[in-house]
Amino acid sequence: MLPVLRHSAEKTWTMRDLINRIADDLKLDKDERVRPIPSGGTTIIASRVHWAKTYLKQAGLIEQPRRGAVQITEVGRDVLNTNPAKLDNSVLLRYDSFRSFLGKTKADDGVIVIPDGASAPVSQFSATPEEQLETASGTLDASLRDALLTRIVEASPSFFERTIVDLLLAMGYGGSRADAGEQLGGTGDGGIDGVIREDQLGLDQVYLQAKRYKPGNTVGAETVQAFIGALVGRGASKGVLITTSSFSKAALTAARQLGSLRLVLIDGDLLTNLMIRFKVGVRVARTIEIKRVDLAYFQEDEAE
Image (cartoon, rainbow, N blue to C red; front, top):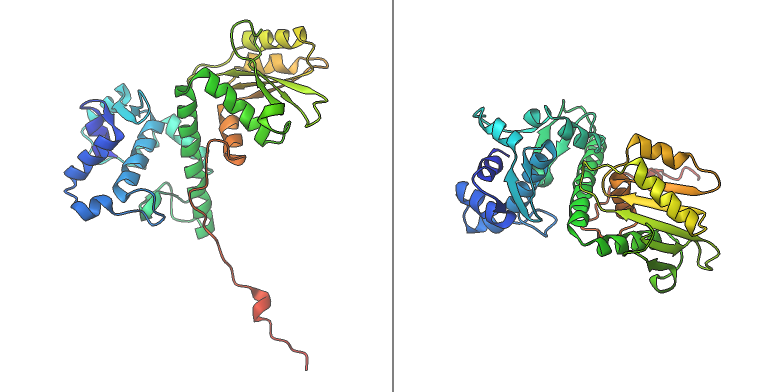
C-alpha cells in the first residue's frame, strides 16, 4: 500500500503504468512480472496493486479522477507527511469510510483475505476456514460494488437508464426488452426515465426514474415529490426511483407518505447488490467447490 500511495503523490497514474513502476521498484524479473494468480486471468503483481488501490481508495487516501487512473488526496498527503514506515489495515482502520467498507464484508472477526495468499489481520485469527472464506467473498463483493458504481457514474445517462431496464428484466419483470422495457428519458419526460411491464401480459406498468449521482450527493425530498407528481400525472400506480448515491431522511419519509401509489427507492448499495445477484454487468470469474466427507458413504451395512 505504501508504494502505491507514495507514487500517487507524484502525479496521476494509469493503473497499468503504476503496476509497471512498482514492479520496477521491487526489481521483479520477467517471469515474476507475468506470474499469474492461481485462478488465472491476471498477474500477481497486478492483483496486489489493484487491491492496494481499492483499500486506499476506500480509506479516502487516494481517488480515481477517471477510470483506470489514481491520484492522491489531501488525506493521503497528510499520511505521507507522517513518514510512515509501512501502511497496512491497522492504519486504514482509523478512517470511518474504511471501517464502513469492511463492515459491508461482515468482517467483524477474523481476517481480510487478499488474493494469492497475502492476508492482513483485522483482529485475531479466530475465524474458522469457512468464516474466512465468507469474509473473503464479502470483501470481493464490496470491491465489485464499488467498481460497478464507478462504471455507472462514468457512463452516459442513457446507458444508466438502459441498465436499470436490463436489471428489472433480469429480475423477472415483463419478458424481453423488445416488448417489456421502454426508455422514456429525455426532455419533456416529466421525470419518467423508463417504463416496464410488471408482467409478460402487460396488465400493469412500473414507471422508472434514474438519478446518476456521484457518491455523497444525496437525493432529496423535492426529487421524490417531483417524481410522485409525474406518476400521478400519468395515472400510474407504481414507480421505482433508483440512484447511484443515497436518499436523505426527508426523501425516505416522502416516499412513505403515499396513498394508493406504491413507490420503491433503490440506493447505490441496493442497486449494485441487485446487479450482482441477477448478473447484470457482471460475470462469474471463478467457482470454488467446498467438499465435505460423505458420511453416508462410510456407513457400513450392518445387515447380515
